Image (cartoon, rainbow, N blue to C red; front, side, top):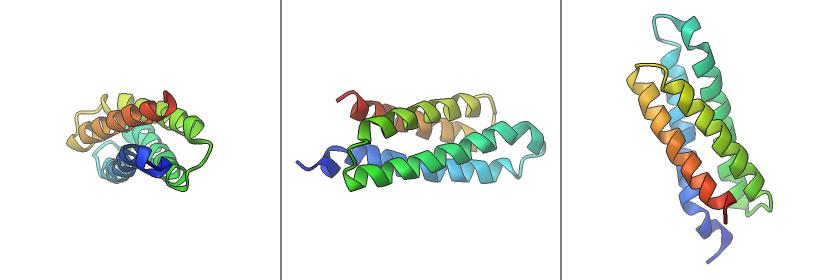
Length: 111
């Protein structure tokens, strides 16, 4: 099995998380109190960025897989914790995607 195949579930989780975070950030900008959503929006954007980068580096077979997945998991969990503070469906779905991504990233860096 190649490295890319070993990391396929993590790559898929990262791409799904990035997409969900982007949707959450966009949806947060349409909420009534946008200022209250500022931290959520920022973390959504940071999380999407690291998830895309992680998926790309894993796809390339980077020797930085453990380092990038550790950072990705950390940011995903921070984003999930923030999203859990808001009672919006898009935030709940985002928190779920972030936790799934963090779980898959943890499997990579603990190997």
